[in-house]
Image 1 (cartoon, helix red, strand yellow):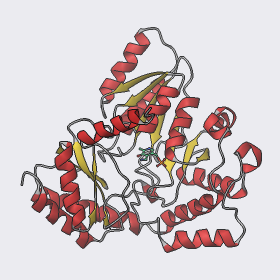
Image 2: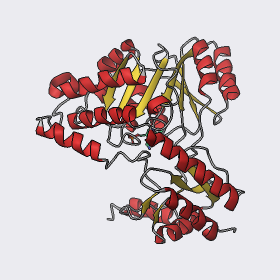
Image 3: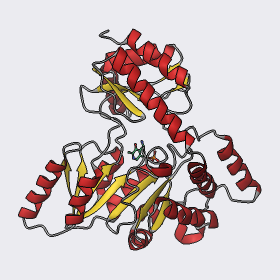
Length: 377
Ligand code: PMP
């Protein structure tokens, strides 16, 4: 009996659709990571980690926060981060995926509506699926549609709270959510949950994110990941004290998991200090964004650019997307093809991310190369 046949068949099916993934090593100039402001290997973060180890900060938390896993480093980090982001309180998680899942399975209650943008990250979809609230989606970025969905739900006699879940900067399209309009809707109906994964460290004053002006409200919950622009790993949920206390008491992925590494808390503290001390990082990245946008507008004018550090260059079908990615990679640029189900069918793309790990000259060289290799040109 071949117990593995079912898995092999599935993998073969993916291969036929040019969708079978393999893990490949990093190679070439970085145009694919989320290390937007170049902190992951920065001397300051490395030194902070070394200092912390030398000072006896443990590598592992060794338990759940409610048991022995509570560390001084983590508590201090949360305190500083809450003040930095402008929230009443913050709570750390091992990563953004688990943080989204944790919040969405814990805060929206039975009888509530969790209403999310259709292009929300997989972790939001999974949290919604596993949670207690009713779930609906609205068309990407379309506040009018979100309002209609809520009106229909209310018309059915529902009186619960509405949790609107969005990303401030969408991970695959690099466009922004209309946060102020969504906030107005949330003020009327419930809560706004903003995943700042790709905006933290990049946008807003000192890289505090695109929802920085909304932080501190009692109906706003934000997610700041530490593994992207901040250069480490983990995530923070920022919210009112009562919601954070509720998570501590009711959130199973928090209660029954080993706390994040205290070493990462020390690294996170240094990342926040860098955001305060080194605003030039955001400025250089903005320079890359503007430069690449201008190059593409000139060389491949039919392509749309996002205006952020995440630039989706949509090819369409899977095979040509992967061929283009391979051709660019073979010339020394690390840039990846993204296929369904990560993005909708027919919108396979090169997802380019601009980071400080590439120079301005390399950004321009990549634009030249794309013009040369683009399937239609
Ligand atoms: N939210 C968004 C929008 C993301 O893009 C990601 C990571 N790709 C996550 C959450 C998950 O964060 P982490 O990688 O820290 O688990």
